[in-house]
Length: 601
Image (cartoon, one colour):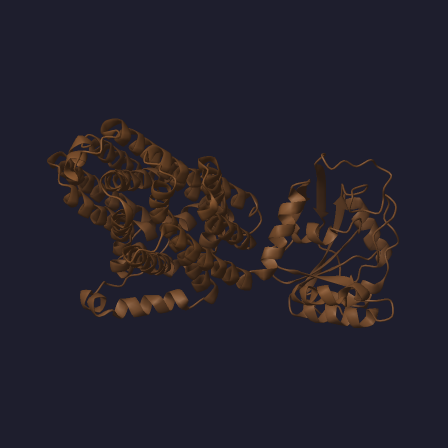
């Protein structure tokens, strides 16, 4: 992925943009932390976050239009120029000791990011393509969060070294003391601009419409663009889930400083920001983990597992009084966040048509911002009326419970597969040969050996389309598992009713599905393949598809196999290899098929 021309420059631009935006925000937030206490601190912190969010509401339509109308690398280049100008004005206000002017420039800097955002994320699909869309999103997420982490560390440490624990300073005096930090913002913006000049143009086509100001003011564009976002329900659902997730995160970050200050008596900004910064390290790890588990396709089931982890942590924070425990909680909060962000962002980009990609990504920002802005307003109101920080954590815990419900409802089957994958990949390493023999579309009948209880997982793991497996009817009809088997699309089979099973398999193949059958009929008890039965030959041959043979190697003697001659160890990571062969004639006989499968290894 990193051999793609422009990939390193692009990630560097993403890094510097986040580093600069975060730097100014940290300076303002730390000043508020030093000067204000209690509900006043929570309210002002919420207002800072609101100033960052508001531009994403105001420029939804223009930002989407620009990203679709012009090459995305051009939008990033001009946005970098504006960042240089804005940071120069911010630095000037620092030197003048104008706290509220610098406070207001938070909004202006966020406006630049709001215009820049759809182009930045839309460029991922253009530059890296669908092949690397999950890995590229993980790289962007990791890069952004590393920038945030370094921004928190660098600007907080420099801020603390200049200001110290002196509580007698006013807000204007503090902002004047830290004025030299403004030049770091300017230099970062300048480097970002020079790197943006070297980004390649990857645009193939753009819209040719004109932007009509009257339609923007009257809200015509807003209604039209919202309809584009809602056109594909899965895109819209993913955007709503991300909105809920970011809302929870915003409130947690806004409330946590006051919680540790009032309940734990911690007043050092390095300690407070350091604990929250560990979430950033967690996001990097979570993003890389999500990319690893999305090697073959976007693993949306990870998002549900991430939401469950977020819920547990948010409910647990109010009962934690140890800095170490809170630090670990934020690290895991970040890790689970990465599991949500990478697959859902990648899914939105994958499903969005290129011609409207900028508009949909701007709509993503808009809807998420509506959520976050609403939650921050509620947080401000709750804090103003005296609701404690602990109570706000519990409220966010209930919201995260709803987040789990939304994801579980949308990605139930994928969540099940993701959980099984996490368990099995901890003890096995899977390798696949001949994956290029599996077509993206059309009916496929998979036929091969049967060596373990987890052959179904090994077959399904690298294939995005769901496979219809055959399962013993007695197991299929067990009350506790029958609903799950039905959702999984399994086909019940028994010696007395095998014909019905093959008729059902024929129907699914005619509908273009993938059906997998184990011709041996049962898991082999030896290290050799058993006889291949002719049942699959009963399937009608008039489906538009192919037969793909496969051979599973490496599971003989494992805890999931019936062959136990080999010594097994739970601490040894087995290498499991699956070989997919070339397409075979649909009329191939069982004995011939067995020889083909045997020869695949």
